[in-house]
Image 1 (cartoon, rainbow, N blue to C red):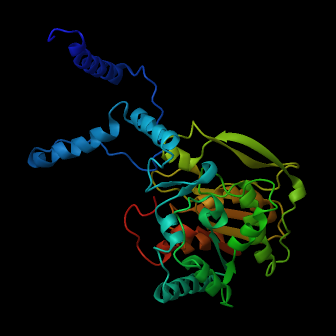
Image 2: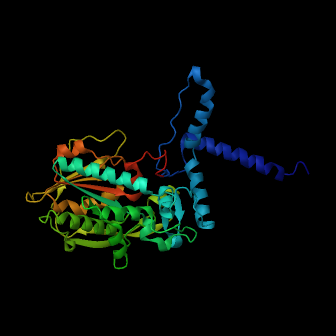
Length: 381
């Protein structure tokens, strides 16, 4: 029958959905947690009478980024794909491994499987760049050290999906590490080997399950290796006294990779935390270097101690350097940590103004190409 009530269910439901959507747009009564997308959303375009032809396309891009329920619908879709289909909602950003492990896709995946290859030309360019930086720092009275934060894929390969395999060992970065270790003029600190060696005996995970960064357990191992390398030239620097730290464990919501696919509130992991047993030696001090626009407060972290007999430390870092700061700072008279928006420039002018004795370039393996090439836009994520 054409007049049957069932013929009106679909259009009435659709009309009701539109009405609720419009009402929520004005009153916001449906909660919608924001997604951690690691990008800047499209800004609202301005109407230009002389360029009206491009306005519809620009406004559509803006609306697609800002309409209400957008993040909610993405989260619903992400949960369905992750929990029901056991696949990554964004395979170009996050790899879903075994037992709830997540890995960074993109440049990290390409490096691991060998799609990004360091041929001899690139190796030579790396050597030239590191020697150029070493010479500049030495001319300024400092000692230059290089350390790579490795890929999580290399530290915990056992949880990668079976279909993700390396084309041919060794990896390009492993080859570069071997070349740097054989160069007697460069102070290269190998972090990959000790991290792999410590994995079996570590009391907690040394990388996060739902993040591509090392945990505080991994950060402590990295800090110990950096101190050990520095002590070969600066024996007055003390080894890290681990008895001053108490290891605890905390269950937290999912970290950044879970956030990228919108399920950080649906998964948890147990993370190691180190708490001081005794008062800190290093304390925050004033820095006169202003951060760039749209950057956060830890662009620069500066620490000072009363230990005048110790050398001073300057570190150019990325996000892997953040948990290392707490373990390094007590061992130096002054320490200065610069996060230069992932550029990893030499920043020789800032180093000269700070007048430090030691320069450490602590760089994530996935950012190494920045030192010798201009990567394509969006390559990092």
